[in-house]
Image (cartoon, rainbow, N blue to C red; front, top):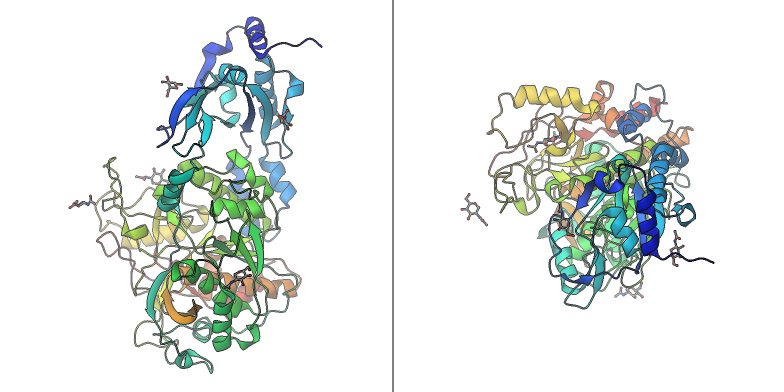
Length: 634
Ligand SMILES: *[C@@H]1O[C@H](CO)[C@@H](O)[C@H](O)[C@H]1NC(C)=O
Ligand SMILES: *[C@@H]1O[C@H](CO)[C@@H](O)[C@H](O)[C@H]1NC(C)=O
Ligand SMILES: *[C@@H]1O[C@H](CO)[C@@H](O)[C@H](O)[C@H]1NC(C)=O
Ligand SMILES: *[C@@H]1O[C@H](CO)[C@@H](O)[C@H](O)[C@H]1NC(C)=O
Ligand SMILES: *[C@@H]1O[C@H](CO)[C@@H](O)[C@H](O)[C@H]1NC(C)=O
């Protein structure tokens, strides 16, 4: 067989290509903002090295996301509740035939024969094994070998270009500028810098003896100790699930955060004896372990809280524990999303080094793609500052929450615990590029700031009040995260409610221009639930904890019970609930919160007021009314 060396092949292609030469029409497609810290460029990559190139194709119809989601989730839509199938979603957003053709023609005209190209199953990628020389010519770049002090090596280029007429069809190309920073010390630092800490805050430890907090339910102390009985009384939750074999409720925990079996039983012994010995059903994502080697409040607090209250409020509903990440890479939001939707693993370029856990990893943990059907409700009590997310990362992930909503899943996130400030009460200085984190500009949370999920703020039983009195915004230990996104525009479902608030309370603005985003952006939270003084079993004792971390699983439990009742009468799960939450018909189903605020950044923040507010959203649930209204929807 006649073999053409890659060099000749490329030379041949450039002689025969059409005029004008593709060389002259290339435009810069992606570049690294800076060279990776600690990695030294040691040499050019050899011209005959083979690169497994993957060309991510641009998805189509992304402008339809909000419209399609609204069609199945707005209470007045004739298609309410008629969720899409996974195949319909893949089909709607997969790259167009025109895109596949444009990219294929580019490669073939550049001399890469058609039989070397392979289209991935979800049609999102074109794969080709190319020599370095071929890749450098295609992308008008130079590949280098980089080395880390630990001895690890990887290859990459600083920037690359594609022909102008192909650019809109290409999302990104790998391997190029995307650098996996994982290696030795550098990796450890990445974990410290970007790992999302839980929103949970440790409060004072309750006396080891739990008798004062145990059954029979003591409702006198709910301003000092929240228990399952207090929550049931506050929100009038009186419902025992009957559709537990069909219904599904998932709780996300990011490794190394994990529960200890003994802690669950300590809590159950005191508050839900019927659950002693009952455990969540673990789904181990990306080689996850439910670790028990590191035992501390920071390792166990979040999982204990989420599982004890999620299980307690929905018993006997089995809980799916989406344990995400192994002990090397850990887990992030994109990692659990990969596990519930296999098409997300590669969607718009796949997971991002430096943001997500990258699998398979150095200890061989696989990437878990589509290993479980998305549960009907998913609760996640982790978050990061929106300002620490890149635009592409945030938008890609937010689009995925919309797709889960289209499939019929309710995605619930905590709204953050620092009021209008960010993690560690950091506020932004948009004018200081050197130190953008020492200013007075409000610092919204992500994913809460994504408009296609439900963000939950925190309330409290005011000191000296009872469960029969109105709650206020949480102002003990933590303040409810809330405000306005700097990335996402305002979705139509909240326009009326948010504009009412802005007109009544922020016009004129009490804060200097630039303190928060007033350009019509997504406002959050959407809803609230108690977040103060939760009694949990953790590390062998009963402790008190605070946070929107507690509020999220409570709202998720309420929606799980509502799904149960709907399934029992032959209806489907409710899916994305925000258009319903903001619907005037549903207003009576919430306890409006009108006192307290969410101070931060050296300001009082925003105030809880009649109607929606950026502290407690539409308020806390009135379960019987919410149940009746949801049951009346198709
Ligand atoms: C690239 O080469 C690898 C290793 O030989 C092979 O497994 C893979 O199928 C090839 N991919 C394409 C698109 O030819
Ligand atoms: C692209 O990278 C090359 C080095 O490979 C560099 O010389 C050039 O300045 C870069 N261009 C841009 C726009 O970053
Ligand atoms: C930790 O988990 C392992 C694996 O599940 C188990 O065998 C071991 O008994 C546990 N140790 C403790 C102290 O809980
Ligand atoms: C933050 O800014 C204030 C004044 O604006 C200054 O006094 C303080 O030193 C700064 N802190 C840091 C860590 O830069
Ligand atoms: C405000 O949010 C919008 C998105 O709604 C964004 O386009 C804009 O850049 C943001 N402004 C600032 C100052 O961050």
